[in-house]
Amino acid sequence: MAYFCPLWTPSTGRTQKQSIMTTILFVEDDADDRDFFTLALTEVNPDAVLTPATNGQEAIEILSTLDPNELPCVIVLDLNMPVMDGYQTLRALEGQPAYAAIPKVILSTSDLEENKRKCLSHGAADYLVKPADIKKWAGTVHTILNFCS
Image (cartoon, rainbow, N blue to C red):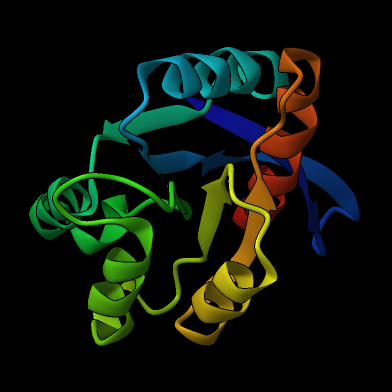
């Protein structure tokens, strides 16, 4: 459940392996998109841990139950969801110091510049458009995982 990266050790001048947990909170109401993301994540980083939520309210509830050492390295939010959408979730998280350091990435079918601007102005680290081609999901997941390093 962790991937390894080399860590240079001054005392030996060599690298050693250090475990880094890659945990993603994936907030998406569409089952197909959850499946596409999960398959792509398995391809890109099979050791990553994916915590799913179907709306922003559920995501905030999940976050509130986690120990500070268990927080995800990135939160991926769909923009259009029932109960609490991605934009509302960004706004709710914006005022929470405990989650300020966690990058929030919007992953939406909408490519409207207004949506992107609005999300970025309320704390989103990035705004990505969902791939229409299943073969391109791995590239999107790879882009998201860059926020974990």
